[in-house]
Length: 353
Image (cartoon, rainbow, N blue to C red; front, side, top):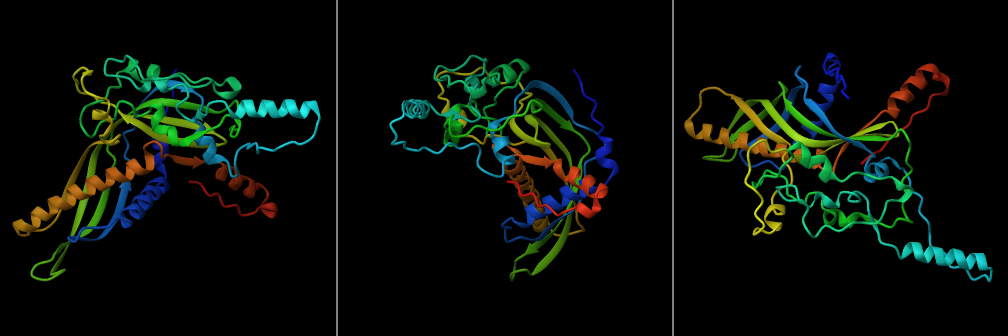
């Protein structure tokens, strides 16, 4: 099965480029800048004409966290009540409630993916333990079967994904009881696990002032234009569609290089202590600046390294699991409805996390 992605439709209208530019500019303005930088702003952003290569690795049900994001009020919560009546049916109900509440909790994402505590050869580690069945019998294949057969490996460096990124203990803080929370599913809901490989001609421009603080603070303020190009991304991502909204989140990086076999003498903590994901694999920055002294050029290099690291941090915080972006399609339907019925139109504000 294959899909045709009309990438050119994203670039015909400059609205998307302007939206991304505005978002990045807002994120950069929130940064705490070092003493040698001021007035940092994103002045241009273009997606480019080369689309990413997307390979579908798995089709299944969306993660429960996505349902939580689309629900305005708490989902189907069942408060505990004490019954003092003598009716036998009420006593039976109480016993059933106690039986349900005493059952094990359900990890909202790690159900069915506990086998992802895998090693480099693909065999599961012995400490993986199964969880209770998911309510409504909605099964989800383990991520082990999704990722490993297609060469998703874990590297030993700090920029690679830890081997137990999706281990159930990683999400233990988000456990809920089966009885207390049951997201409302729809038969049209779908989630794709995809391999996202991008080597396009996306580019962005950043304008920043380089400060020389000697012999006095802000002694020289030198504007620098930075061109960011040749961005490469090779990651596993999830794309989910539910309730007329599209969710996107990156799960882990894909390592193209040959890596050594997993050494059982090394503890799993050796890998989990590193950063979970980078998203940006490679990036190129060109500086546009006039003739300056050599000490100022050294500071230009520091500016470039600072911007690369901050750009990686922004993408990790906004796009890497457990974060995601949500594209709400309901707004488009409301705009069409307002055009058809202008007299009955009303203003609605959607607030999402």
